[in-house]
Length: 300
Image (cartoon, rainbow, N blue to C red; front, top):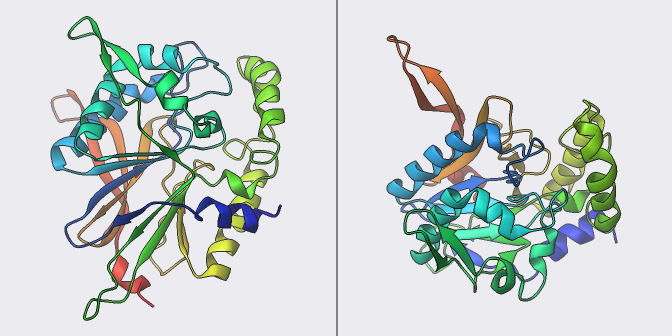
């Protein structure tokens, strides 16, 4: 199966969420939440992420995670990840109870597509505040793709649709042969990474692989005349000129996390980082990298 066919399949049964002037979405990707060990790449940015997540919860945004939220290639147990990062999952529960949480799986958490996975692995968590086991989201569905779309009723503006997926479909090794990749990451590249040797097959760590993957994603978007937003390569992209391909970046950059905000029918690429005030006190800052880019320019 070609990369194009795999991307087409990702959107066959994708849920459609409303997109309007009143919509508020935040798109994040590639958190790679781990188990708190030295190989947990999420640890260094966990405070930035939680501060940003709290901001979007108070702001009334719907949170959409575009895959690789949890590192399930290096780690086997989702329960251990939830226990270590219980504050994140506590806030996820608040989003979920208000129907503001949508999670897409990527290659590193592709096991979430299994039927019954959420009931088995995400049904409950230990709340540190109450010191009790509480329900999490046992009935939540993990999707391969989601479509944000405007209405098409008579008299309305032309349809604008944004196609959201992780982006691993552009790589044969990370999609069709993901079990082989998982084996290599778990038993070969993860131990070597602790010695400073990076995985040469990773789209996030190898620029040649990154470029090939992004070229395939961009080609699919252009050929199908779709607005495609992914993660996977960890390289944020929000061109000022009209384009077909966009990328949220990741939450494991060395000193920041990046995401795409959608509000008032416009997309904005945002960076959250730790910075200092004049009196040398630290605070978490939100900075616009690119945009806002109006979605009206994508109307056919």
